Length: 200
Ligand code: 5GP
Image (cartoon, rainbow, N blue to C red; front, side, top):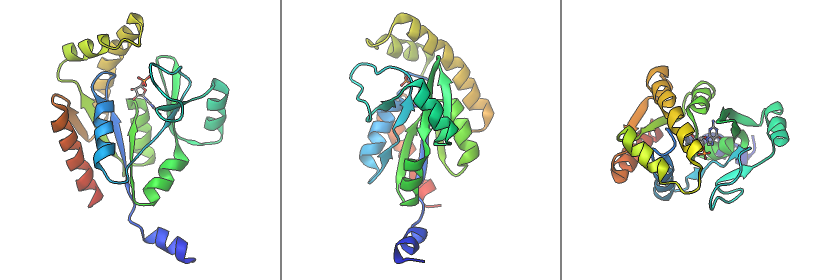
């Protein structure tokens, strides 16, 4: 064994943190704070066939790819999980996650519950947190406040939310369910969960 591979095998594995929840629950704000506070943590950039929204930057928020490219990645088993959400495909490239976790670092992933369920099976050691809005009224108000989307799309996201919440509660794939009322409290709660898991 080379000294490099020995060093690699002696490194304690990091943690994959999966954050799910309905659109508008505040997942992205929680993820942004986690990235700032957890040293060396890394954001997992998903691939998607949907079009960029607002100020989204290709390669930073998502990699925006064609349906053909997405299909190719699925066929080559390059995705840890993938799912369709409102007619568009979303997926998580596997290689960067494996490299980062093997190096002992934390990877943060924001995905829907279908993806979370696949990860629960393929990487059961991952930490999966579901974020609830304080009330459905708050969720509605947050979605309506998004200037970048049509009203129809906002309605669809709202309709999708009920199913996602029920799934998170009953599937057993989300050991941690938190209510995002005050952002600071939610971030502190997730930090606590991650720290506990890191020291297992
Ligand atoms: P949005 O279009 O609002 O960015 O995302 C729509 C939904 O897709 C959200 O619930 C978001 O968390 C989820 N999502 C984003 N990336 C991925 C991914 O790589 N895989 C899966 N399964 N869902 C994703």
